[in-house]
Length: 455
Image (cartoon, rainbow, N blue to C red; front, side, top):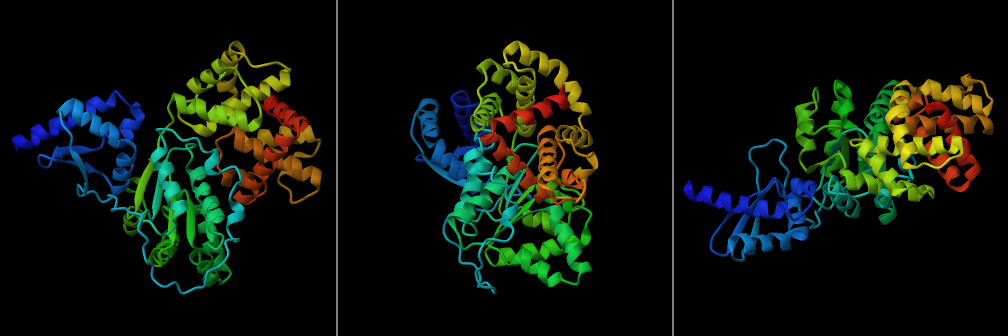
């Protein structure tokens, strides 16, 4: 027992040495959760939560650990990693990149056209800002996208708070698989769509068509899986869908706002399966990462702001990436309306005074009314089925602003526009973003509508 305490202190001393030589969030993500002890005179045993963490530490911090051994313990060690079980029901299985031989699939390979139209062009890996706060989830997502169904990252379960990038990573995985493996079929859906499709299949007597749609795929990407809670029949159907895909070596990626063990009213057999592969989280970004996100957003929009203004925005919004970008849009919208530039003084005034007050009052209904006024149409047309080009554009603008300026989900936004599907909202946002990027006059018009709503 005494030896174990001495050995434990040795690793703690090494951790203390390394903690001041790397970013705090990176240290907390990768090394703080480990424990270690010399196994013999030549080998040092490191215990880690899963093999993925072992691979990452070995590839990114191996030199730093060896430096700590020399500086703190006065000698070199060979590192041996051990996955630590600890009796946790959510433990991660051992992970490697050797090809797994899946069971023979009963269906022939199909093209990947169905399901992928709902992937937004904005959500790709090259537009995802990587920092200490999300690097583990990003690395795991890349690994899955580069070798779907081959690694043991199956299922990959990504969880985190609202606006931290879960949907971005999930759809980026879909895009990359489609690009790299043209013959693989990818299907992306929210848990609400899964539920809706299942209910529709029952009412139309077409359950077999539903099962083919969700099971005859190479990669199934389901967003916000926590919304299956309390839906017993849907859970039963997803359980069989999961089993079928897993049995045939197909990739499954899920997102949630919480880890599996914290999802209430979900069947235990599902929660257990969600933890078979890798469970990884997205944390709130640190200051440097928030600034990087803002700079990337400005670059993509072809706009520049003073560094001190960017720093102020990053200091003001600290927990939600979507809200961080929305705050930036508000500043730019005000500047466009007032025909002025955003300096530090103006930014301070807007962020400390107008922004918090207006944010609470903004609703989808108010966005629809203001947009209708700018486009000179009847506000009821926002929910109508009429599809003239002028009305359709106004409706798409209102959807874009609802997504940018509120925290409403895609489903809620679609519902407020005459019960439209979430994919319609995604499509509208893509159209408006592209139009703004190539038409300065149109961008100014959108900024004016935004400013009128906010100020």
